[in-house]
Image (cartoon, rainbow, N blue to C red):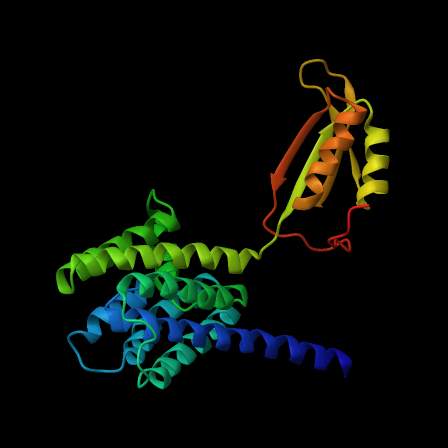
Length: 286
């Protein structure tokens, strides 16, 4: 019984976040971008252009234009992804109709493209992080690039460049430029939401004093370390490689530990998008 409740809560949380993300995205469209004739990329951008010629709610276009891409998503990624995406697209279409009667929050195009991009990035980031999507252009790009010498990212960029150029002829070139700025901001914010504000770093240390260094890392930082077996590529000498994960604020202390024990130690520090498992937690520096 408890297992079923936990499973239900996970599913509920997933679709709740998809709905919240869709609602946030719709708010960004209706309160910032659309009233100022600023486009988003992909299907939403095409829908805004289509609405300029056919007087139907934009949600209708978003839903209809996404249907073939949702089918591609089912073929390429799977049923769970498609169901979450369908739910998100439907919620987005409905929420644009709910928000449409209300006046825009800003009428300055520059402010609209900045804050609209931020809000769109938050919304779509939540949906993608929950296992869905609100735009079919990426699904199309996955399908289209199978036999082409270009990446999915390059295809998505090419599609959006075409959309923004077309919008320049239909609305104005100023509008097209604002649309590009908004799209860039949305993409960056989306990355932050998907990856999280994770400031974790991976550390690799090669030193003859590996025992002292690993002991002090555990004592001062409270971090577990893993000793890997290594071999010098030139000398062939066997050595130990210290591996651990720390947070950004622990980086300075770790460097001090390494230098104090071995000034000639090799130290490599890299950013990590996500850390999970092994009870990894941010700890206070002692």
